[in-house]
Length: 290
Ligand SMILES: [Mg+2]
Image (cartoon, rainbow, N blue to C red; front, side, top):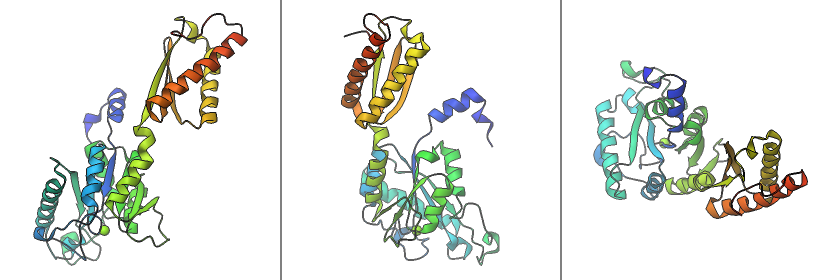
């Protein structure tokens, strides 16, 4: 455990900087593979991978590959071959997407309890369905697991993702017995699903109301009434309200749906709270600027 994470202040700062990730399984998800692959020259991308990872990178998801490589434990190839295959995969992805970097990090588990190579013959917390690789990546690359996704073609991928606290997408034919949150035919479809589900948080609108007098919002009863009005307005209009923040004489509302929705919400909130204010003995305007 690193000491760099420090005390409360430092960990709070670290938390705000955490990045979302999409963990991708390798074989059968990113590359065509009918078994074990330790040969860099045979790296071949599956359909939809290039479009999918380009979309995810454009939306600032960290791409992390997590792959069981039991072929090492079975003596089919060594760890150096796995590294070489991953270097080639990253090269192919960069060429195809035109991006300077695609995969933030590769993690692989060379262990297998039935391996033939003594050194690798054991169970290991990194071997999916265990979540070890995802947990290590989150620690080493400051990733927010609860805001992240696991995408793979096997149920063990889904299980590893769930165990790490991520949402999951199963690639390929859905057989109906999976615990996956969503299903997709390929990485492109999975990326579209991820962007759609996460969209409200991406397109957040922020709007600030300023009290007409500096001390008005110090009144706890008034704050309570404004909060209730905002929540009831959000419920009535179907707008998702993420937060209300009080700072001095200002109220800042953050909600899903972007700037236009936020402006409309603010206008309506001004009207509703002004009425409440006047009905409860307030005189003059509650808010500045109108
Ligand atoms: Mg796979």
